[in-house]
Amino acid sequence: MRYLMILTVLATCISGCSSSKESPAPSKQEVWNYKEGYIISKSDHKVLVVKNTKAEDISKKSVQQLLDEVKPDAAWITVKNNGEYDSLAIGDKVSIVNDGMINQSYPAQATALKISRINTK
Image (cartoon, rainbow, N blue to C red; front, top):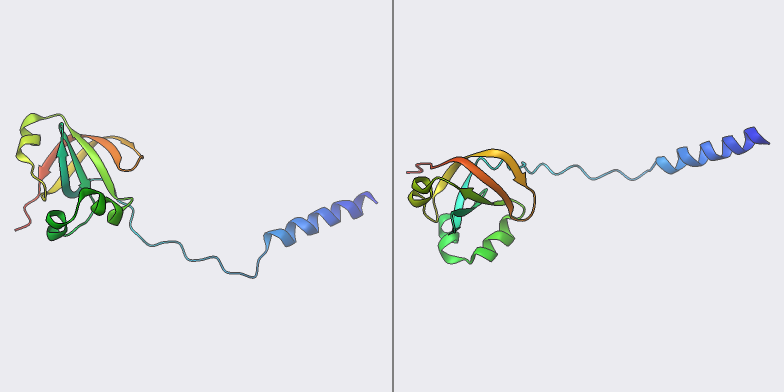
């Protein structure tokens, strides 16, 4: 009786784990590493950077519209160096070296050890 009960539980577990349906393929979307992006907003020594957007979208769309389009690829980057912060403008493509701490809220939050404009011309 005991072996029958063990066999029944084991058979139930095995049949519950198998499925004839195929799992969907994992998303091939590349995960953003927060090292490069475009500035879409500036405020209080922070820049809002998104992974990818078009220059004309930055000037034509609101920040919220852009955030909705790029989700989850956006981050507020705190810029401690006044010279670096003052040299940046909305629309700039930037390279970011962060301190390794990234708060995974939306938008994410991080602190830049170094941030610099990338020449795209």
